[in-house]
Image (cartoon, rainbow, N blue to C red):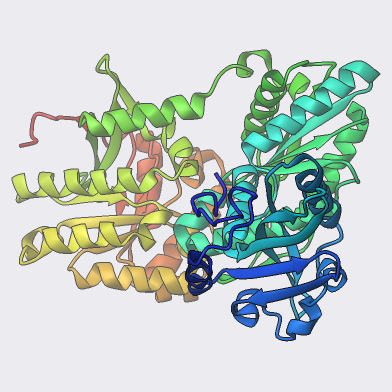
Amino acid sequence: MSDLAHIAVPGIETGITQDSGSLPELVSLLIASGDLFYEWGLDSDTISWTGDIAGSLEIRNIDSLGSGDNFLNRIHPEDLPHRMICLSRHLTRGEIFDHEYRIRDDSGQFIWIQERAVATKLPDGKPSRLTGVVRNIDARKKSEEEVNFLSNHDALTGQYNRLRLRESLEHVIAQSLLSGKQGGLLLVGLDKLNAVSDVYGEETADAIVLAAARRIENCMRTGDIVGRVGFDRFSVVVSNCNREKLFAVADRFLAALRETPISTPAGTMTVTASIGISVFPTDATTAREVVSHADGALRAARRLGCDCYLDYVDVPEHARTERPELVIAEQVKQALKENRFKLAFQPIVSAETGQTIFYEGLARMIDPEGNAIAAGGFVPVIEQMGLMRLIDRKVLEMGLDVLERNPSMNLSINLSGMTAVDPVWLRMLEERLQDRKDIAERLILEITETVALDDVDEASRFVSSLTQFGCRVALDDFGAGFTSFRHLRALNVAIVKIDGSFVRGIVDNPENLLFVRTLISLAKGIDIQCVAEWVENAEEADLLKTEGVDLLQGWHCGKPEIDPDWLN
């Protein structure tokens, strides 16, 4: 219903001119509401106005609306023909004249108005006067336009959203089937955007998405269609393009994203993407199939690594219908919900005496059949999907519970890179260790060398916050990132654990032996305890002892055990 349909203005609503004493009063009410009232003498082409024209229409010179010609000159050129048709039908057929259109204000901007009027006719049927009401509806129209835009477009990038993109894809596929020419869908997934959002915040992630959207648009041909279809995903529909040319398009997208760092609130960042390609109508003839193929190709491309593309036809058959990462993520969520996580305890022993000095608590997920799944079976997936912090919190909870029940035990647990910026984890640690120095001094927290070296200053602050609670910190995978003496001093850790890849086979590998010897010397130089991981036999243990390693860990010293007999 029209905005003014509820107003029963004598003569306007019925089309009959009345000399009613109530008309001036009703006009006054309309004016008070912000509407404008006019009478247009059609023979003289003069218009008289009542109301605040300047306030309502931003037009201060009333003479510029004093004639029909002047008034019509202010109507938007696209809207004028429709307004004239609507008025003509009212004059000739008696149809209601109720029309919305744009009019130019004094600043040159167009605003939306609603005009509702009725003609007064002479006895011979000739119209002599037009009486009407004009209302400013600019705010409502802009709100409607915004709602309509958002129903079809992504709010951040302004590109098509998933629904609108699907409709466009269906149309392009239909044209492709008629013409017999190939086209394709490129599903572009920004690499590691979830991790960026977790570490640096949504504002930084949004800056990357917006910059990536513009770079993709700049690489497109006229007629190609792009839409943002997920948090880190764009879909590009390319028509009249064969498979080989689609590969060239994918290469162009990857290069545009990779070559110039993107400026964000957290600093400049280099961004890469993975792309899945689906060709139609050769490989699929419906939008659902095309999207499914592109999604499968993108997932396979991501498993190959960052900054690459893959065509669906090149995806291994067994991987085309599987969603292993989603399956694993759901299994992890369910296991957390059902409390099916446990710690497996592996001893770290003295190289000199073989006595257990402390244990490492290794996360294990117990499947519904009771089988224990090692961290390597789920950690890589959940790190990509942003669930690692939940695991770290669970491991911390389990580790502290064990230390409370076993007052003579020392325990180390592992932390992911995300935990260093997780305030919830730090609050959990602080609350549990409050007034429990006896627990804190028996807790060892392990961070990997590669995470520490990614931002040494930030890692050093994190280590300091942990040691203030009374805990010790161990640097895991020591040697993988080639820590310098300066870095090691800055981190201020109590223990280093030599990466097992350098320890395995050390007896027959002089290069590894030389490297391990250097790492031991580096640690000893600033009085840090040194642990050798992956020790598998007595010969390796003896050699490492001779080289000066303090502690040993590996199957030679003891396998990880869930619920060992000695554990309370």
